[in-house]
Image (cartoon, rainbow, N blue to C red; front, side, top):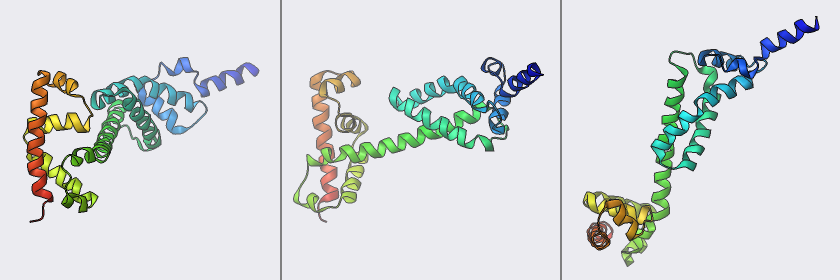
Length: 204
């Protein structure tokens, strides 16, 4: 009797080694049912795909710690939504759709942070009495318009210098040009930006 009870518990709880042999859809059902051993099934299911999620996040975000943070968000979101997963697509496809959405969300949030965090450094170079009277949103709009109006090369070097906080040496390396050429490109970019920015902030 005792042996039968032990066997039943093992079958119900799905020991970890046995779980590794199950397909994704089988693991999904175990997690959805929330029966005995479902947490082990969850760990095996997500552990099976975690490396792929991290790799995808790295390719989209370009930063290991950001990739790890977004991966954690992906897995938490996937677990919360797993009860609604109906198996119309492969679990891997469904998970990677969540991963891509989370990467896009993170990139938008990061871009907004960078814009807010570093934009004043660029504006300070050309601040005038008129600019000082503009509210923050107007200043940000003026900078955004000015950046859009400069040439692609100018915009690239301005973003490297002021948004990514690169040194001139790093800019030269990124653009594969000499240090003197990097300096000249930055000076010309600043001239272009200044003309466009002043046109936005000066009273008509």
